[in-house]
Image: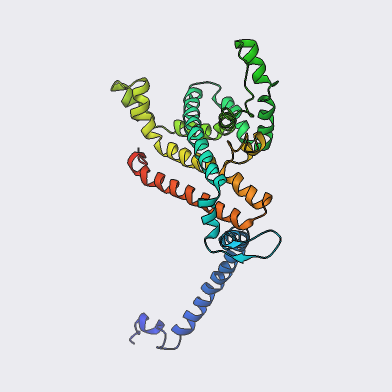
Amino acid sequence: MVTPPIEQSTRPAPGSAARPSRVRDGGRRGGPRRRERWYAYGFLSPGVVGLTVFTLFPVAMAVVMSLYHWPIFGERSFLGLGNFRYLLLEDPGFLVSVRNTFVFTALFLPLNVVLSLALAFWISNSRWQQLFRVLFFIPAITPMVVNAVIWKMLYQPQGVIAHYLDSWFGITAPNFLADSGTAMISVVVMSVWQGIGYNLVVFSAAIDQLPRSVLEAAEIDGARGLTKFLRVQLPLMSPAVFFVTTMTMITSMQVFTQTYILTRGGPGDSTVTMVQNVYENGFVSRDLGVAAAGAWLLFAVILLITAVQFLGQKRWVHYEH
């Protein structure tokens, strides 16, 4: 008796069993995938709705408003680029605010970066470095309004600063916030004190990540002190320096709270910034169209400077150790 081959006895008949099997498998695979897809849509929907309502819609409205004469109360009329033309060619206050914003950034940015970097290296060798990081970071998490009010009391003619300048050095302090020669510097000093902690933490993290083998090799080759810092440590920290520089520039171009609380833009218009100009056009003059145009001009300035920074970073930022 001859036994038929096993493969012939178990092979399904052509066109009978294979097709229903693929349908059942596909159904098992498609069901969970379909449910997972709907789960994903459910998890994403709050973020998408929030992005649309709180970001995309306001941005679109700001574009539309900048093209209109848009008072808070009253008729609206289409102006095209009239609001931008008014700010750039007819409103002297806007150009003064641009100048003041650049002056603030030119003073605040290098002071903040250099001091935070120096402090980060100083506390990196201290046994109390964790305590120092917390102490320096406290002003960064304190509300800006509170910091500005405290510094406004310190800057008063009868305040603490004036008292110690007189008692220790015999110097009669000026009225820091009422003198056009010291008002902007006073705002910068307060802003550096408030913002130095965040950058210090970033630099401290970068210092902790410096490769020990490279530092030891540099020391064996004779690199010490300033040479070691400029030729070894600073290039290794260049991504952190670039990040800090970019973010500090963006925040300094948007300065508003401290100038508004300390000086309200005065004396005269010596400390009026671009954001304060936008605020006053929108909520004092009640012309939302001009305010939106000013906001877009500020955005264009920040975007341009940031783009230049990103193009320039290819020359001095090193991402590989």
